[in-house]
Length: 196
Image 1 (cartoon, rainbow, N blue to C red):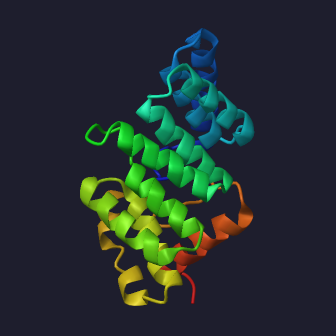
Image 2: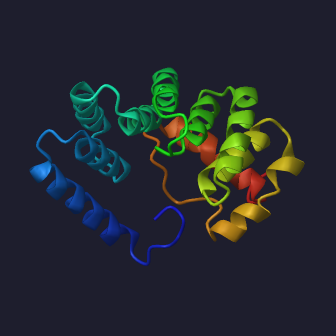
């Protein structure tokens, strides 16, 4: 949806949320299903506090669930709890340093960015790009970060992003705070040459 692959984003969001709710109906005490459904529902706009509670339940069932800590970090970043997000994402990396449980470095970089710690965000985002050069979000956040740092030449190098997705500036974001959304999107618009 964010990357322009959906022909009907609204219908796909409804369908995705429906599938996540149906998964919850049969999840029982399965931490993987609980956390994954919570992430999907939060992404599609459900009450983020309720979804964080659902992930907390998954983690109480399995405190060593690296993917659960990753999802918890993502949801906390979306809700604006940057420090807790970083703690939870770092826990995911400690529990599973080699296994791919998600793009924890990208999320850590994004949390630093949203907390306006641009100098700390840049190296994490660069590492995330090196880890997975096909994931567009670290490119977007890095471009926005560079723009806010006044490094416009670097910010405007979005060619690689354009080879991954036609959408440089997404229409929607999972960020619940309007100020954070605008921080992210204004930097992207500047990097894409859409704003001065």
